[in-house]
Length: 539
Image 1: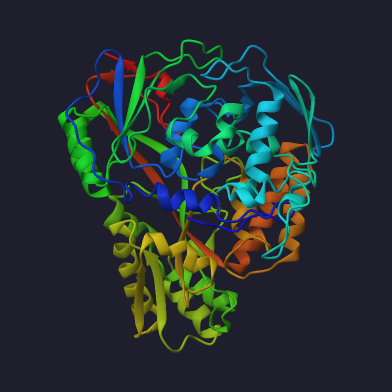
Image 2: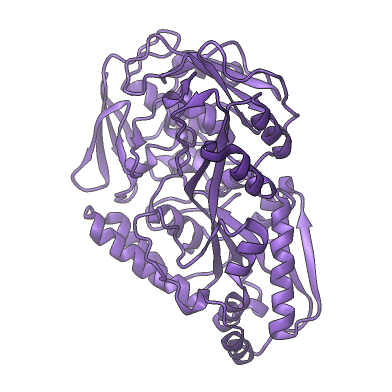
């Protein structure tokens, strides 16, 4: 998933949150795992796809987050209700939402014994924000004053600085952070893995650090990353934070096949699998019983339009297509009825979600759809539908959508454009699509802002849609310190996007995992932290 992001809050994030979702689609291109050992000696094994990197600022992969979130303590973390609370920080405060004072909890150490200080965070952020470093999460730091000087526009332009002017180390345990614009969601942003601290030893050799990260979290590396095979973590004896492990370690085993991982779960060769393949869910419910682990998620699928193409410029046409789609029918046919048809641009777990906010435009109504289609002047020529090959379910529901459009509107010439996952989002960045395309979003942090600004704002969206009214409301929401007032502005912005419908919300994913008989107390959160490895008990 890749998305251009930001506006209103001073951010222009690109290729970030949506990149995570592309990789988060179960089981990418890593080599096949295997092995025959599950839990033993207080250590348990979890299956996932191969990460791309383990340097916190150089990945947006949820599979990398599985490991990074256990190796590192960020300043803030999410509680069970999705609220940002201190972790490596004692406090994060601001009087104006623009200048933030961060107190780092004393007494923390990296796994190599190096003290964790305010400078550890400043060094990590400067490294991530420095343009020539080409870190994957570079633009997550564009909220901070001085970012532009580290990332000048122009192919051959040289940075004017190598540190963020908005990050001031006041003393060993105090940071003062100045943002470009007031941004009430900054504590939420500090939960994102890219904002983890870095030891000086790691910054000296990032390549070596990628193979053997040195964090400040509850687990440390047990040997180097065995690429395409496994990553072994053991409990860190010097950990002083609140997330003390209830086990001795976790092995993250890499798989290239979701079906193989599920087979190994059934056989007890792994102990936790966060995502069971859709085709195996009915069987898993029956065989695993109370070891089947359903959960809510914040991942939504959307159908976007290339609004810059005059054929899709009419909001009536876009609403007509939305109303021709039978979301519940697709849910039953493809997802066993477990997904949740979208009734909003936001999933239910996000504060600010309003039941049935989308209303009529998200309701299956072929008769009304035909009226709107005629009002828009219809559609002529080839209708191309774009999706990646990351999941077989994408092709399945796209075929159902195509049939609905043929039956409802009489569109005969519909062509599928299935693009390799590795090329799909670069194609969207370059506006290579010529018709509606599959898009999704997995929250970087659970905030209405993270969805609305990053997916619909004029400076960030990939549809080519612009709305000053929408952007102004997002900026108002970002500035306010009152969460209730902020939600009111976010909802007003959402109403504008629903009326215009440049991108159609389809359904929220269902989280469906499982555990072996060897482990207990397994919690998989709906957020980017995923499995709470520290809570797992080994029998």
